[in-house]
Length: 211
Length: 334
Image (cartoon, rainbow over all chains, first blue to last red; front, side, top):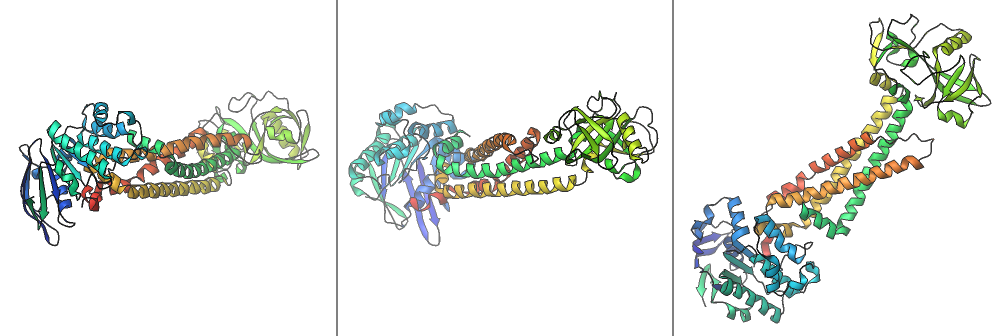
């Protein structure tokens, strides 16, 4: 995955020439103050926003040249999302959260095995409101991985968790990179969690700098 | 569709409220349909059940059987029909409409009757019994109740008899000898009407049905507005959740199908329950209230309700289509 020369502005420039290459098996942490453009960068990486300028290659495809339907399919099949508040569908059970993605993409990964690997084998038929915060976030990570994506994007995945559960989730994300060979980008404020990342970058003044 | 049904099943409280409201609106529509059909039956059941579709009436009758006076002899192949409202007297008075056909005619009920004998609508038996003799209030002609057959016309019970009895009655009444209509296909100098035109010409029929149709129309529109508003509000409430679904790549069509399926299931289920309650109502509504369960009409209005409700999903579907996943995520990605 290669991001090159990304520029974006609202009333003021917020991203000014972002370059970023992420290799398979690499887990990257991104930090930065509020309003620094982390949200915009993640939306651009997640194909939810077109930048004013720049390219994003996933494999050999410049995704910004694709139409909306093609980008949707890429989001479904090649990008996994983990959100701060998990955003699980409240009326679907744990196993159905993953089945929803599979049904949409006609894939047949072993959702039950994946959830069992995440320590949720005994919670398959529970609704999200019966799970602890840590369990919900693990379901969210499993949901992001079920389609075997190229890229995993996590937005403050530990923000609503205590340290122990946050740590478990970060270790799951790092494991997704190291054991499943995924490219993982984690945005977080919690610097205690960053030691599991292979690289940590700070977004400041529209630029990424290595810490 | 499965997504929508699972949401309904697992969030029963939210959907039971709109189901109850939908049920009440559809029920009101089907009950009004029952009343409209009951009045329609009360007005024209006997005409509707005649086995003919062509009625020849005198030109000045404007399609009203009771205004038509035909003194000419019937043309070959046409069957005379006499219709006249009378007041029958025994110890009490009962208003009814006399219908007369030739005894050997197969257009109406079997009329194996002697001269002077009549078949009466069952409602007559609240006042009289079979074998009673009743007298026409104006002419003094006496009829004998020989049996019972269903029949209603212009909100009055029908009394069936033969042309022989009709002729005897006319003789007693001392007026001109006439019939009201000639039935069947054939050339006459009279005005021809279809059965539906005859029914719609029954005094009050069109006004009654028009009133009910307007009520049903308003109920359909009001119901559709309520459903649209509800599902629009639910869609607005769920925008962040729907934005997440779009963000992770779920097709707008899949999410939209879930919404449409919820509207469809709500209205179809409500229509089914409303139809059942309406059917049960026919057993408890007092006989004095004309109420009829016509499955075809109830199905028609239920189908219209489903159709209009589905049209009402256009608004929330448009909101869903325009929903930008990045905007829906908004401040969460800080």
